[in-house]
Length: 121
Image (cartoon, rainbow, N blue to C red):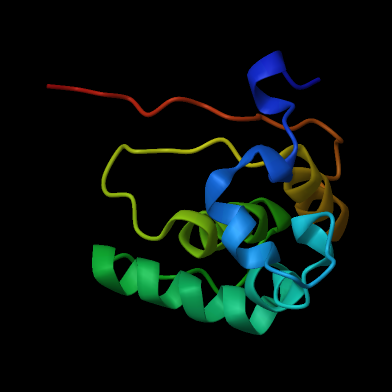
């Protein structure tokens, strides 16, 4: 179950107002590019390769739904905010979380939700 700070509408996010423009779209998940940028497994796979390459980590042959979800959340964040930098996280709007979880469901139905970055100084 989400906590209060995770339950907000995409229209409350200033950065997304630019994406809505005059398109008549009321929710970012209805935006024509949302599905391409955040839900398309070819796009997400390319993003995963780039992330793993930058970190010098091998990518697994079998990509589970949890990995797809994490890649989708990251893609959305890049699309909405641009690159934030290390340990700078943003909460994803509820409609986006719902669309990503619907596309890449967890078999158990249990999800972690937003976690603040671990800041170790």
